[in-house]
Image 1 (cartoon, rainbow, N blue to C red):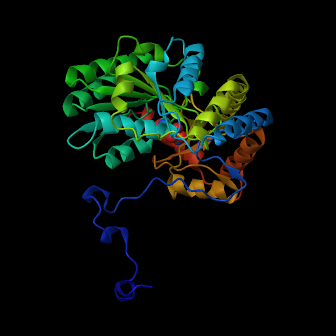
Image 2 (image 1 turned 120 degrees about the horizontal axis):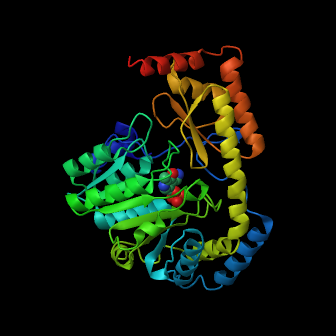
Length: 398
Ligand code: PMP
């Protein structure tokens, strides 16, 4: 222990000369608890299939010999394969020059904010939404503005356009399907917001499609044609079941890809990451097969939760927002009681609501047993009744 430490105790973050806007803030931190059923971070519950594990090992072995060299800085082969994947599945032809990849879509978003946001600039997103958009804005010195969502969590065009006109943001985020609410934003709404953003500034519109493969609808990639200020961001963390890989990517006008080169770190995407992602892309069809299973399990969760008198937000994602918990302790008390049954769901801080990721059928059964106990088990509260009463009051205009 140093003499300073003995005199004044351990150094705390706020004792350091950190940036003023970081003082007193908390880092992103979904609880990583060791419980039997973890349905709190929207991961894909299926481990990678064995033939893909073999292929990854093979591809990584090939690049391992060359790890004395820096990797392909422009990730040409990987971007070519990502363009091929999007062209095949997104309803819109894309070239490698329109694709950029980074360590998770979080890094893609960070690079976009470093390029188009920053000190003196503003980003706006419609909340509740993915909390990292605001956190990455803060990390890049970009001012964050919380735009409106309706009580049903949809984005209302006149209200949203008014917020854009008022704040004239440099960057607008549209998350579709949205996290944590699960609902998708219609293409017409995104188009109207794009027009509003161009009239106000013009600004960049980032469509975060992290969950689009689970959607009942289609990707917004076709909207890219003729819209150089539109960016679609994607990830291999969800549909490809590869959250541990850390591979996100964007599709946009080639000029956007050129622009993010100005801020990306040289050789940011390791040779091991590129090789692993390429192996996963070789197995796209198998992995998308799991997506179909997860979609039908997601729909089962929606149906069964509704049968238990929970309110459920329409879901186009691999998770479901359910509620409402207005009794004593609200959603946090319900979260704890579900956890007491060994099932970890997510309290995203949306008052009255919780979010559950779709797991394997057995995990989903465990979750449904836990929420059934919430309704009917010992100590069950009367929140179903309360929800119905609240709904009635709302219908009566109370
Ligand atoms: N966008 C949304 C909407 C998300 O929910 C997430 C992760 N939960 C991400 C982006 C980031 O994912 P990743 O960095 O793993 O690609």
